Length: 156
Image (cartoon, rainbow, N blue to C red; front, side):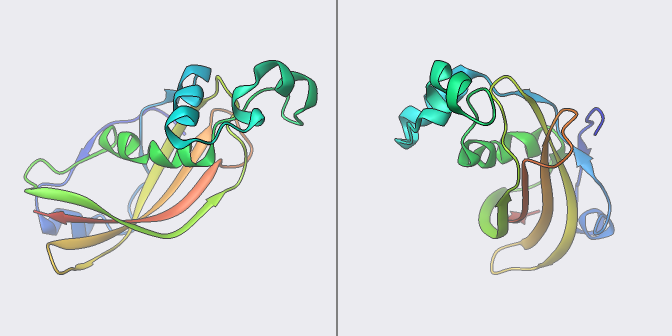
């Protein structure tokens, strides 16, 4: 994945033309140990593979602490905001996921980036529903850390 630029969708026609297009790339984010620790505090998931740096060096097959899968997932909104914009939208909401997989770990200190491909746009109760195929990868990683189909709704 390379550097990101923000792609703006100003109307429904532009969004519909983008089905199958992409990937739209986010900015890179460095996952720090401080982020991991803060997420552990908020989520209550303080498993040692996330927060005990010394033990992870000694006992983890990854040789370091790793980010929570749900931390990586929670960054999708931030990733999308750095890749895709809806400047005329009245509102947008998360609708959920069709599928989420945590494929490979994100080590503390890794730089990660998301790629989005628009798979579908269809009418919804309010606005339209978009299905985004998303992958999050650590820089130079052989496999993605996360793969998902993310559903969002937007009123343009």
